Length: 178
Image (tube, rainbow, N blue to C red; front, side):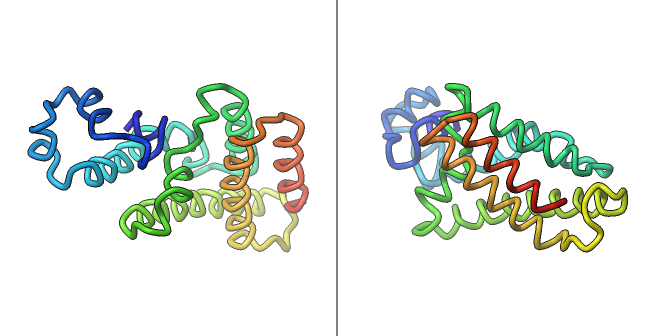
């Protein structure tokens, strides 16, 4: 998972996978039927189970509201300003590199986006009930916009990790909720 996350699917060689897994070259395809692609898809599953919950944090909690949505975005900005964070999100990277040509990879990415949208919608609905956003807010539509904003933020942050720029993107997204 780490090799794919650090370098991308295309840049990872079978030799890289042999080193990362400790499996002998001739045994790689026996250990991982389907080879590099199957291992990549398993890596996406692993990332979704191990890394995504850490990144979503309290946004997945039943009581999540506007503060948790903002906390998620603030966490993205913090990550993007660190050297490790500039490698981005494996699922966003996969959307850019693989989703147009690989239906299975695209399905995993869509699943992640749907999960994120559900969290955002639920949090915005809670925020509307608590008077934290305008009463007329279309929570579902706004969640879609926030999902697109966070995906774009991660792309922009990889190329230009400027804190002022990233915070301006986030601040403007939240201004639309008031």
